[in-house]
Length: 73
Image (cartoon, rainbow, N blue to C red; front, side, top):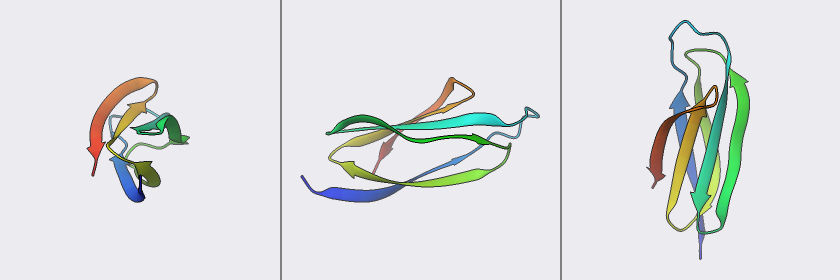
């Protein structure tokens, strides 16, 4: 199966909370892996390039709480 490069973009919420951990987990035909796991300030937009195989999804959590789940085209 051909690998492809995709970009997962997420903007941290501006809700008055201080720096929190942004974690992006990708699931594809090869399994599950963490592709981003860093502290970020409110309002920062992160663009993370990921290599995926087959159908893929990104699970995004902020401060340990799931906030988004999306298909990766």
